[in-house]
Amino acid sequence: MVTGLTIAAETRESRGKNEARRLRVKGFMPAVMYGGGTTPAALAVNPKEVTKILNSRTGHNTIFNVSIAGGESIPVMVVDWQNDPIKDNLLHVDLKRIDLSQRITVKVPVITQGEPKGVKLQGGLHEIITREIEVECLPNDIPEQFIVNVSELGLGESIRAADIPLIGSMTLVSPADSVISHVISLRADEAAPATDAAAEPEVVKKGKKEDGATGDAAAPKKK
Image (cartoon, rainbow, N blue to C red; front, side, top):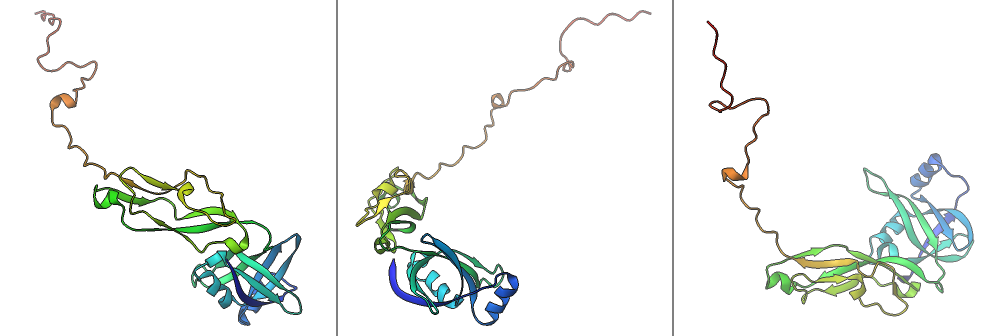
């Protein structure tokens, strides 16, 4: 989704862990901007501003502007990021230049609403299989999310990616038969273990006769 949001950025000449530490002391973090047929650019940006974008309703699908000091303002979106494994604060971000006239591929969340009749009336179980689908569209047509009403979903029925209505320039990239959610029967209780002796056939060891078993008579002992 295209927004009017703009964040400031500065170019950086050096790279490496020491440079990253110096940036963080100043309240910045390293970033790389690539795409658009040009050389990747090493930047420094404010991690708080990028965190707000990632935590917004449109998340990493947000298209915003990066204003480089002494340069132009460029539309970008976040394509990858790294968080501290302990503190969870943002450490690094990759930005992709976006041409607003060119189609791009994005993953969009799918939200289900309602209680299926297959659960309410038929005693089934509603399972959500996937929570997003992939679509291709113009940047201005990227949806915030898809909302699917599952109220009419009966037992044994499913909603697939092809059932989600697309508008504008959107086309489906995910397999059309990908299941979004379905209603299944609850699994019946497993049958109790059989107690009939016939259910567990007896195994007789070879080379050893049972007590009292008949067979060739033993030869009489000589006195």
